[in-house]
Length: 337
Ligand code: ZN
Image (cartoon, rainbow, N blue to C red; front, top):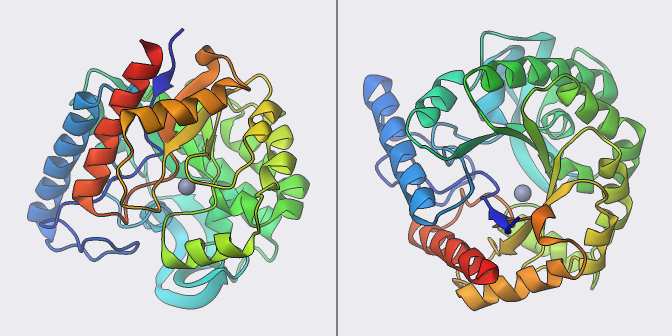
């Protein structure tokens, strides 16, 4: 099998939909106009991924303000009127997060409407991303559950229900976004994998986990500088993830200090390998993409490799992100030729 392709999940939103280049942008419309504009933005996101000939496409997360809070807005027990400022991702940066004030419960399906819309607007296999349980726990203030594992397992149950809703409308892959795993390796070993397996224990669709050192935002770039020459968290994390029920593990590679040999620690899973750097506006050439893929090929067979972006592109310049999308597609075509 040839090398397949996808994006981590998000794409920048158009300037007529939301504030550009922000991680928590404000919507610029409301009511029916906002709903309609989200669908138009989704059409463009799907069109551009189709043009790039990607194997698995997403809705570009055009209907979500933020990848975690977009999920939490649909959950009972999460109070957005009670925001708290806290350090997240092991205090790497501060964020205003909602408070857990009671038992968490889905008010209904969270992303079903937008997944159904995306499903009916592309012939390609659709991937939908959901925040992973540890990352959710790390992006809220808990006043109800009392410990992070209990809260993670409560959210895992909601994610499990959401996966069932999504697969019922033809979603091919559900990906859990778990950047928090790299920030809390001890907890990852203690209960992080248990929580991931609880999410996917009866999933009928393909499942993936995206782990990364974060978006290309300033706080993350600074943090990455402090990590030294080698980012070896994956040396610990990938063997753990390889033992879960997850089908696919997604990590960055392009322009990072991730030692490529860690790819060898992905056992029995597909690997979505980041060949597009989201922390720079430099647009990779197809040859750059091939060069990064050739590194991955040193550790994995082609039929286990999915070429991807390093992380979501939501906070990027839109013209740059879309140019990178085409570079990804062209690079994979060249690698498979
Ligand atoms: Zn990421």
